[in-house]
Length: 292
Image (cartoon, rainbow, N blue to C red; front, side):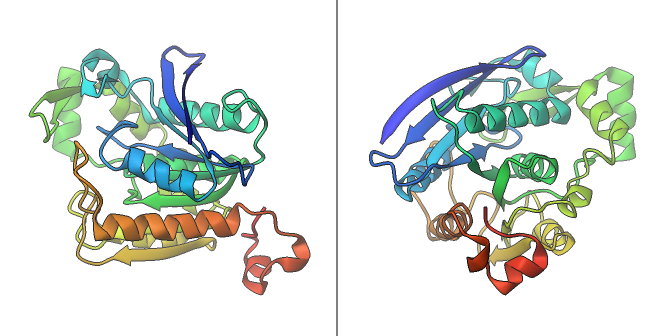
């Protein structure tokens, strides 16, 4: 496997740092872009392991940090950037990464067939992107949330009064600030930033994976996403939660994580291959969710 860091600049400001992984023997011109979630980063826990498994399956894999995720060298050190992050910014950066992978800016050659895998809030970002970006030919979400407005009226009042609230990083105990920009972005763009609404417009074959015992994002949210899309199938994994038993620093895989990866590899393998229209299945033809 060839490993190569890359850097992209957001026209609105901020650097997107990422990693490019290329199979030692190129067997495909497909790529999978992997998206971390809230309080996540590209090197958290299972992400490098997941990326390596996707590379072993023959895909070029791109993982990256959103420019305002606040993480420097694996720790939350840029709290000013973290505070000012918004969903709109994340979507702009995700689409920038997708375009840069597709046109060869990141990989050195164009890659017409892109898969997208997002975890948690990154899963919501992936749904929002896939609903409008035709570059996405196959979608997988892990523990994705179906709505972004997750605050009580009391929290919104305090947030507007003080201009900031804090969330705790359970791993480190840090109190991480969130400026009012995040809340105003979500509340002012309810329709545009509604993952459940966007799910209805996803035309790429989509696999929704969720842990039954997810205490962070209840599995019913994954079920609602899958039900909203004619292109989605659902896998609820019993006896596991939001990270499928994985922790950070990574202590090794788990049966649930292996299962999630296996389902994801199968999905991308089935839908990022070249398939002539004559070989599409009846279900693909009827749904409009055919492979590229």
